[in-house]
Length: 440
Ligand code: AMP
Ligand code: GLY
Image (tube, rainbow, N blue to C red; front, top):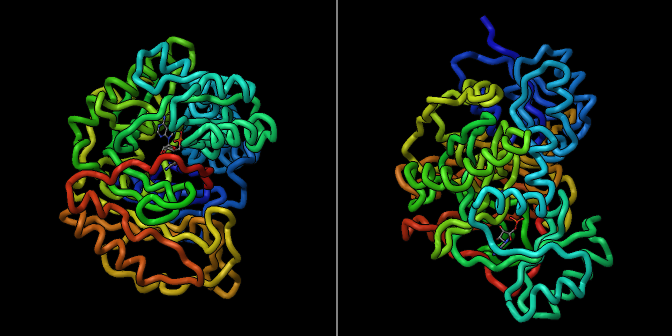
């Protein structure tokens, strides 16, 4: 007997990892993806509907008679795909457009955090360069963020007034990210941690902690990227610490959104700075993070399908607890030449069929040619994940996986989880005084 029809929307390594976890469900779901990628095509039926095509996704879900639609990326969430699916009577894992504003608008997010009493850096919203400079005063480094959904790609850490002016001008005069408002924020010092929680509109259930490596180069050098690797969990954020942070961060936000009539269903991702004064929120995302998901989900022993179905029902996660593989996981990203500035030219990938045992491969930016060869297709190309008895063992195996595949110009960081493997803690935060934009 075949199980429920599930449609996963998106085309990256995150969606591949979600589908891998769903494929382990004892309910044996019939898996579909839109648009998917060549890796996903090995475990799901793929449909050529772009993730951003909201009416197309609703039509496809109806044709498939999907019991659940899982939305990977933020853009369709912000554009109301969950609202449209709900209107068509189709259950979804993901928030409504109203709740998704938590990621779409930094100013909205700050307003919710303040109302919910959740710790976050002090901030001012400005609309002119002069107001921005006045808000910064002489406090450097200063954090300057473009508001709007491009915000994740528009964060500058300015080391001095000249850098601050340049950033404010590029956001507010050149409208580099199409936004007219900027958030000027207090600089937070510490170690970064991503903590995801499954949410059913009423309560938040934390997943294992993870750390993302945002810069392109070893030692956090160079520009920001969508993420060059991850590991899970952080030594100092075990299940008890994650539950305590979730109670202080995710749950009050969920309560506040419910109070505003926008209950949050789906995955609430808190980007945290673990400061000397405790965890502070850097940002919220309203979907799984990429590449943290690739490191987190292979460790999940609970049935992701059951959890996602439960999260789509108000209060459905009550009484649920999660089971994890105790072994840590490390994910290494292979990116194209030219990333993050450009996606790089399509080139043939070798070695995909000869990975060491125990390495989990997820495709992030690939395409398959008619002759069966697989080409790079975009910035981040492949993710290699391994579990190990400790972080050092997980690193060794993940990097053995990365060494087994090759394509011209491939870039990877060689220090994913290295500091944590030797100290039991994560690496220090990114350097100050540098600027950069986050590319996907
Ligand atoms: P965001 O898109 O808000 O996650 O910002 C991208 C990156 O900029 C974060 O991962 C941090 O490394 C850095 N960052 C953002 N806000 C702050 C802050 N208030 N203090 C220090 N670093 C920050
Ligand atoms: N890992 C960062 C993000 O998914 O936004």
